[in-house]
Length: 451
Image (cartoon, rainbow, N blue to C red; front, side, top):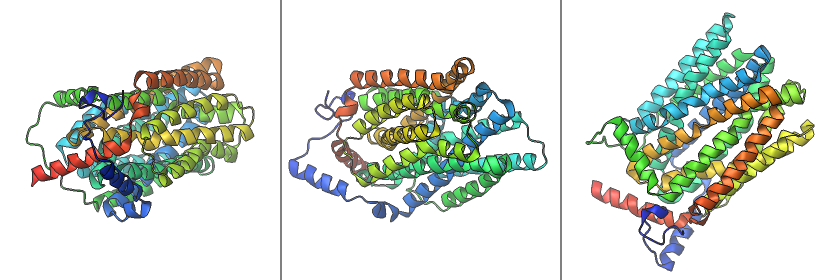
């Protein structure tokens, strides 16, 4: 089914037909969006920088905690549990936060969240300073941080959609993805180095600094005025409305399905990086840091390529990037030496960049503006499949080893991704220029109604 050929929303989104001249003009405008244009928008710049500080700390802390726990317990399952606790709040709170983001000021909610993250880092830093830190403290802090990281999709990325123009949406998300992928490279690398040489106290101290910077950026943010909704339904009713909206659009459905598959059977592999490094490859701290940052390096390279090219079919990028990620994970799982493992992880990261750069753009572009926070909340729920994949990987690794666990998980993920592309062909047929035109008209209609 081709998106935009019918008024039935079931095929993606209602799209008015445009003359070839109008489409050509839109395409030229679309191609003019550069990083300098985006950074001239001070609100976008602040959100972009905030994303950098937040994701750096997220990946740095997560991998550092993984190595800390691996050394302290020598149990792959307990390490997996740490990752499980970090991601399980996505399932439990994603849709709820999406509703809150529509009812209350998104900026203020974001500020409260960052402040609590700072408090958690300060508490764990003090406990470590006085040699009172225990594994259950780390687990509790990881869980609280996971609860607050849920705000990334329904709040921060929705705010990006609020502050940029419709034609800037994909380039804005791609550039944000470049930052995310860069921090996915630098964060794990620094996390393993800091934990190896300074101990976990260095990680928590860095958290104090980065969360303070993030708070300052958000405090000075001036997004468009978010008008409070007059009609307020029950929270569960609003969550249900979000799911009902998604069910009318195949592009939203398949984006969420692929997100769930990727988080359950691909992203979860990072929980076994400590086991691969310590138990399988017998790496020292410096070598482990290179392994931890390799996939992020590939994702950064891929994101740079995507940011400098204007893709009009992000659905294809999303699907095929995901498949590439899974295939190279299968190859990585049995790499005998570090010299083979790093290039394979870099290639898997390049595939990951296609998935990451397109995900939020597809959700925002194909959702009605009034439903964006709720659909992004559902996206957070689908990302929440990751802890279940982590738990499954940990159990398999405990009995059969980390390489076999990763190979089984990635193989199953590859099969499911191919099935999703066959089941919902909208993902590789959709053209973003058409949807961008439609989104622009929706914004104009909304502005005229407000006036």
